[in-house]
Length: 142
Image (cartoon, rainbow, N blue to C red; front, side, top):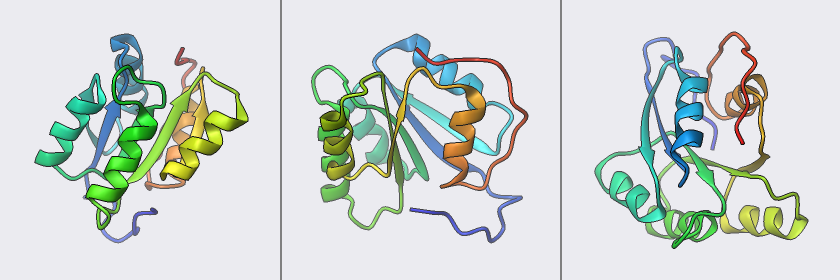
């Protein structure tokens, strides 16, 4: 889902970062710092559901292989429970297996991004869904 460019300068976009590794969530938050985004974090699919019950998001950065409820299962749940929600879901994974990527896309993820990812590359991908801009920095997600 792409966001309309109307009133972008004053709009604060809501982003949910879901990853079971605290370090990855922190790095993603650093990557997004200084942008017109409000970031919430969740360490599990269940916590992400709690966040979604309280707030609407413009973008979800979602680890595909979460313990318990996987990112793929969470995506299916989001797309079925909140079909009217105009949220973009970008999956993050270290797996290059085509089957994993296809399964994530079939579940309803808008895109899958391979880790490690450079900040500039991540922001470029996010920029396809949200009108953001930032200066590149040399940082990676593992």
